[in-house]
Amino acid sequence: MNVVVFASRKGGSGKSTLAAHLGSYMAEHSRPTLLIDADPQGSLALWHRVRGSPDLTLHVGTKHLAATLAKARRAGAEWVLIDTPPNAEASVTEAIWHADLVVIPMRAGLFDIDAVQATIQMCRDLKKPYAVVINAAPARNGSTDPSVADARGAMQTLEVPTWSGQITHRPELTLSLAYGAGVSESHSGSAGSEEIGSLWRALTRSFEAIEAMTGKQGQSA
Ligand SMILES: Nc1ncnc2c1ncn2[C@@H]1O[C@H](COP(=O)(O)OP(=O)(O)OP(=O)(O)O)[C@@H](O)[C@H]1O
Ligand SMILES: [Mg+2]
Image (cartoon, rainbow, N blue to C red; front, side, top):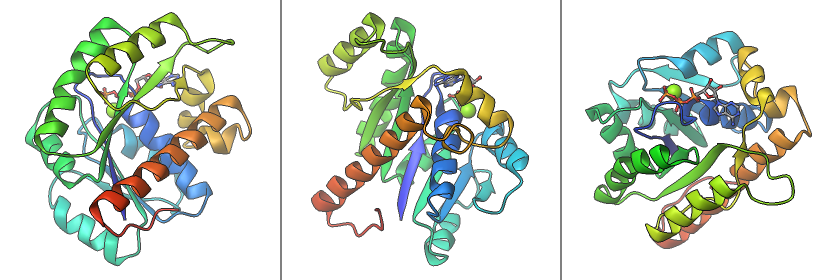
């Protein structure tokens, strides 16, 4: 069972967006998945309610996380996606403590690069594998946008593992969520759908690498 925590002190970086799109991708590919909304804002829970489908299980709240994960494991969940709030509350630390991998969505820009460092430090303190995912980036149009190149450079200087791909800023990523869907369901074959698919494949490869290093038995693809 792969536990992915979406965390960033920076509000609006895309934690809930990535959790929902990846959740829908898992459902579409019949991967037994538990979503945990550990953010009192309730964005992921709202999306799940609009979705109105039993293909993804949802747990809301921060209490009894260890028991919830143990129950999910017994029930055969392959993936657990935990959305967290943009702060440093104990619930975020606890979620990261249970993570096999922490995904830190980050927009390109000085303030975002600065804000993300507290979350990176938290992962380092807890000795958890983590990766920055550049989100809501300007479209590539043949070459990487200078703001994205700059953000990548900053991450490289700070020795922060960063996904080589990007999730581009696309209206369909917002629109599909309004219907309780993910972009791979509502806009199958679109560029946005391809990017979510490649993020999923990158996560899968990361889990394989983590398993190889730690000997942890997962059930990734
Ligand atoms: N790749 C994207 N393309 C288009 N819109 C996006 C993208 N990523 C995020 N957004 C939009 O940006 C806003 C903030 O995203 P989201 O709520 O996922 O961030 P968050 O990190 O969960 O925020 P919070 O910290 O407040 O929980 C939302 O309106 C969402 O639709
Ligand atoms: Mg959120």
